[in-house]
Length: 253
Ligand code: NAD
Image (cartoon, rainbow, N blue to C red):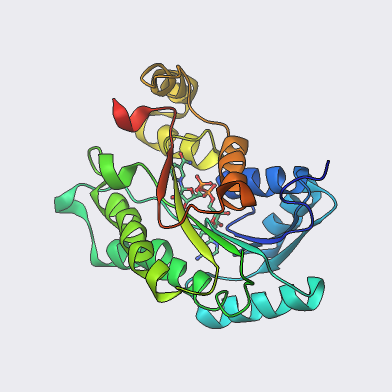
């Protein structure tokens, strides 16, 4: 039996590491042809080598519309069509109210909000009826703990975006949803924990985070891939405009 993602050409932004890499691996495992985009060639090449066949890379900065337009043109040149987009590229921001700088504010919203716009806008004319867009949000949009207000705000923006944008694309047959992870075990999460608590405390901090979750653990990046695959397949054919929390129940605690 063929997989629901069989042959689907999928772009995953920020796919060279972490959640995006996990999503790309899962999509390829489920039969998709994945093009990952990211800021630099070397990490992209390493990720493509890790993922294996049916994956290629394109350097593109989501904050630059021209980069994204060129990336989609290249995808069409390589594959002839585009079926699914995962707007995953994002950056963290940690600063309490009194310490947020203008530069940090602008950079956070540039990547996490404007980057989503520039990922989606040029994709819309290329996607067929049945095409899908999944934006990676975060539970920080509803549960911003200390110092996470700026990041949480930038992630809350995407929920508001799609509520309006699904009406703007009415009649195209394209669906658009937000997938919001809780804590995912990625190098960037471990790096942030190391900066906050000391490099030798990272494993203990990850364990503590897991113990606070109803499932007793934090997520593996591939689990975001499984949920994104659902939102990108016909299994979710009447689901659009939602925010799906993939957080082991943490947002309910
Ligand atoms: P990560 O840093 O490992 O991966 C992000 C990738 O995006 C990197 O490869 C980076 O180079 C790329 N990127 C950054 N800016 C870019 C730009 N302007 N253009 C193109 N690529 C760019 O981080 P991650 O943890 O894998 O995060 C991926 C997404 O998941 C983000 O949107 C993040 O907010 C979200 N998220 C992560 C977690 C978590 O616990 N790791 C939880 C909730 C949400």
